[in-house]
Image 1 (tube, rainbow, N blue to C red):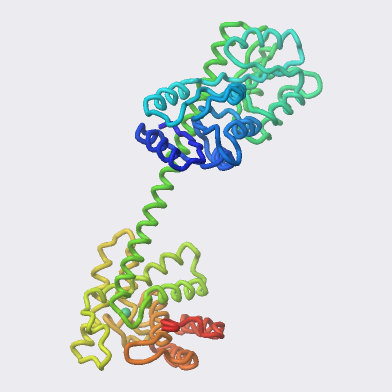
Image 2 (cartoon, protein in one colour; image 1 turned 90 degrees about the vertical axis):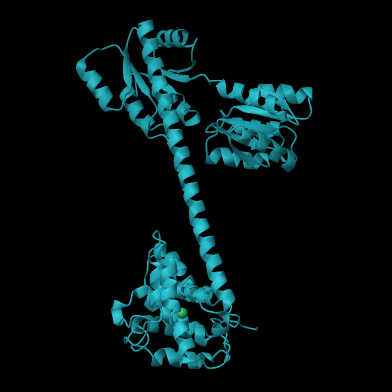
Length: 465
Ligand SMILES: [Fe+2]
């Protein structure tokens, strides 16, 4: 699928053209100014640019003129979109190498045929010929000039300077030259950015096997014997360039596919995050007196995990597990969750069942098996007196021990249906008092640090409500 950069500062016109091109199954990227277009071209490669001529800050002509000055993007095939047919503009556009003009509003059939034509235009390959012998350069220019753009230079240093400015498709390099010989030139070429894989074909008068081996070992693509035999030289160069184009398009295709893969991966991750947030919102909505409890517990858990030295990649996973720790409450009636009076034994048993209920809800999510762990074991106690399984100490998964501390901290530092938030001093005392009994002492100690640093008691729920 060809990649097209569409540049237009009129958003409606941009949207309509984009729609037509997307319908035709082109991969379209849009830019609303010349400046943004240049940025896009520098970030990824495109097969074609559709460029509006009349734009506010920087006209299409000015944009293309600037692009033609930037070597790595200067070759972009360009079609102009125009509502005017100002002759000066047209002349300048042609001078800048515009392939076509499409009048706006663009009719789909005009657009399609112009785009198809432009994509068929093959740019001429460029050959940089390096030889100290003028006659030899003349022969090369005559031989290859019909089919390729040939640039000739008479020494290694001149070739290197030329390569810094513009990259050809191939270099024809004389081996024996005074001063810097071909082999040294090749080594220096490889050090130039973007020339690491540039095909270099040697021109050599000696047919020694040793020379050939040395040239190949140095990274030569091929060599041609002097004097050049027209048919052989043409065939070899044509094949090398065909191979190069195949490799380039394969490389582009791999890049495109990798980009598409990362993009779809990013979308899937975003979607998962959004679903997890929506679910945690649904849990918190049931508890009318403790809004955003899950979000705060998740934030505290992530901070605890961070301070416990968990790697950055783990932190968002821990955040998500904590966000859903109370998901089982979805199965508990609202009037019990929000009951201001003391719960009966049966009601308390029902509340406690949210741990197993949550586990059962999350267990089928096989892509994130740890989600279920937080839900099931966040009410376990370090001394084994918790629920639902009475697990003891390090038998309780660490993430559940972290959530347990964060959960109890938030319960104490938020207004509840039956009481206001506790003063920070009391919250601290409670955490300290339950170290080693209810809480894992290492994690509780980190929580105490966080409390001590929070001198304004900002880590609180339902503030000002
Ligand atoms: Fe809970």
